[in-house]
Amino acid sequence: MSGIKPLAAEHLLARMQIEDLLYQYYTVLVDFEREGMAYHFTEDGILDLNGKVFKGHAEIDATYADSSTIIEGGTEATPKGTYRMLLNNPVIQVKGDTATAHLLYTGFMCEDVRKPPRLVEMGREYTEFVKVDGRWLISKRLIRSDAGALEPFASYLDTAEKIP
Image (cartoon, helix red, strand yellow):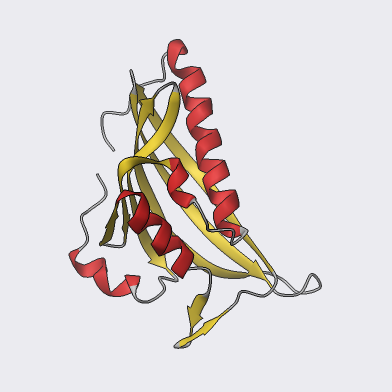
């Protein structure tokens, strides 16, 4: 991530819009309301989950629809309790009608409000954005798990494209 430049004043609105897009995306994701996730992507958008690549709205929506359950210990289960995702250390660079974002994510699950949460996953994200008809969309999204990678995506990590 060398070459990070201070954000110019004219890019502040774009940065806020991109942050809002990321927050909306993750809110729908952790609420397990996974229909229409491709709404956040360009028509030819790419979603790369630990090296498993999905292209276009149909593949992206199918992937998220299939992930409405989680796989733990080799069995599928519907998540029980409250799941939350923290987004940290965002570095958002805007260049006209394109932008990139690097950030860290951490997912927590709490099955019982009287018990402490447990760490479910954490990792890094690199996303490319493009502005289309006045709206920021994701054109390419790379997710790399550092812990808690669920199958089948963990098996692709060895050959996954590195995050720039």
